Image (cartoon, rainbow over all chains, first blue to last red; front, top):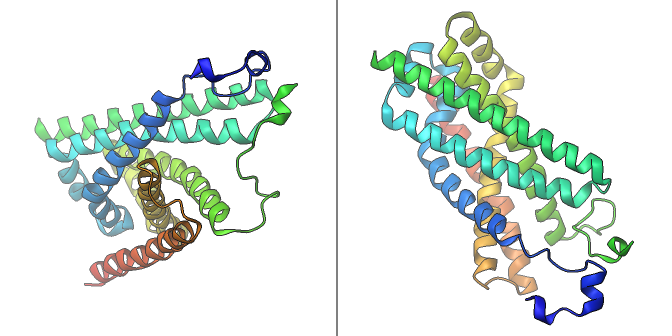
Length: 131
Length: 130
């Protein structure tokens, strides 16, 4: 699209940076995957987390490779989606450049950390059940 | 700076309450809440792996009154975020931009998410009672 922009608009740095499409597509793709995974996992997850389930039942559920795989996928796509959405929010509402970068980096650390905790935990439960 | 001339996203204190800005702001708020929910889910998965007292503690928090209210809230957030994304998919394909249609789908998204949340939690409570 750059040929449609005037030299003045380029100099003022108006308009798109031209790199947002990948993120736009990723945001929507992860949303679609999360809706599908959410339907599959959601009901069971709610019942489990509503407190009516003991540890053995929770471990039995995560001990199935299918359930563990679905949960890993849910966390991977969930964390990618959460990071992009949080980044969009911070870019829209935090106008101090340095603070914005710091907060985006913080969200990146938190989402990566939560993803790692979930991955290691799910795999631990899975291998405990399989061994 | 030329930055000042750029259009801004719906800002809480600038926009008159309208269906469009309300549904957008609610979507953003629910997504922020869902990020917190994912952290709790990660903690719960960790407690399942750890077992013993750790699981008892996390399970106790989630099955407390506050925990259940939070889970109820996250259920609504999940349904609403899904509904909003369905609206976004339609917009991305070029449909639903007419003001009346956009208002109606926004209203449908809020009402359906609320009804689905109530339906799901009725099932959870019925299952817990049996």
